[in-house]
Length: 280
Image: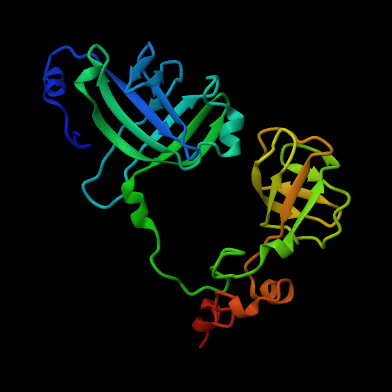
């Protein structure tokens, strides 16, 4: 097996020629295990039994690699009118954290091997008109993560995780939509929980066009109005069933009064803030 940072002698020979015949290819490996190939060549290419589609409209920014520890910089632009890259799939999170491999091949001699340019993972994806822009995070991006905990007035645990220890089954309920005002504003008039009970929680659809899709809840009012943090790929219909889980704003008061879980609070609510410390 040829290492990622090496090329075959044949490919090196082709690169040294005055006139070259190279195309850029992108291989996406989704979390589901599905692999999708794209190329900027004007015809589809078959490489290792994977079809690299030419109609994707993929365009990369300049591929920049740093010798230091600064994160590499790369963005991928693509069109949404391709049958493989659909707007609703991007909104649904199908491509979230997908692994991407970018390389060059000689389209006149595909057996000569690959020149690897970049490997990373999809980060933030934005959609504008008929285009999407995906940030590609390289291996050095992991070095930006905080190691250890920082003092904070708010809880550092994720609601329901091994540090929080709250039993989410006690705060998960079922229901069905009675009205959908838009792709991110839903109504269930049968909900009776207090306002903000589901804020920062999640909702997962069990039936309908959005079956299997989960979204974070931005706000909830006692009238049964549920506003999502990001829109669903399809507008729900009345009668679509769902499962909804309460959220936590990570304050000590909420942890104590709403969930009776103060013993597992992972914050320091009684440490004076910077205003107190600056007072003489």
